[in-house]
Length: 397
Image (cartoon, rainbow, N blue to C red; front, side, top):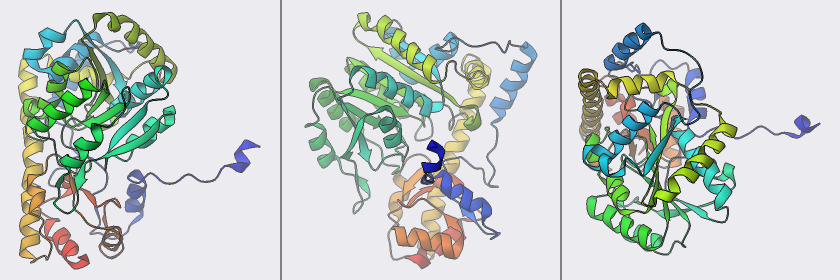
């Protein structure tokens, strides 16, 4: 029997740690591994704007029938507007389409499965380091996945010179995966002129760019965070953007994402959409609806949109405050390592430079859980546990 020959799979590097954390009896335990926003009490709240939208939606008594394969048209239009911005949206309205997907992960997998049908010999290039699930997603479709340099651990900054030299040599027709903002796991984002160079090379060498855009609004704001993506929408002949509403709307369990495709060639629109819908049909058939109804309702309602932007600003500012507080507490501990770079990173994550032994020591001796790469979720830090975290980091160093 096939089932008798199956060995236990490796635990997910992030979600597996959460299982260990749940079984830890230490009352001081802290989970800084999973990418979920927490407030200063350590809870993951439902945003006030989301709660208000849900009440309004409930009163509308919306049918629970299946959504179309590509999802709700108004949700898709609002998603494209949010990413492209009011200035660019009119230019691309007729050359873009979207599919409502089960989270940003669903958008990435849909992109991957679709592309493998038509270009199976292409390689997929992801950053080193990258989100741990990037490689498995593309490999599951059948792609050969490799990487380009991204981070210099000595300077705690983007290794752009090596990055760009490798990207220049990527063969025509290969797939380049970029993080739109709030790079996971490093927190180090590309600057304007760096986006310019990558965009120019991608167009010149005919690379297909996929932008993983999971954190819009958590870095410097909705428009600032989208600057690089908008640059590429304007420059490139074809681009796929995989957006997520897990973090910026707090809709983690609702699985709300959107795959957006833009092309300069209008003839591409209909055939590409038809095959993406066919791929989605065999993958998950139809998208979940409740989360996308919330997003659509908020983005199309001026009053609720303003409240949501206030909620998002509160999340963004709290994360920035925790970055500053952690650096302050580490300085108070007179830590021998300079962690000032943490304040300059963007979004929920920080690549701390802690090695695997130090990570294991934090878990074993202090019940502080972070992934082996040394990435920590800054949003898991609170004013109550920050001193304990800083003391533990100082002692393992």
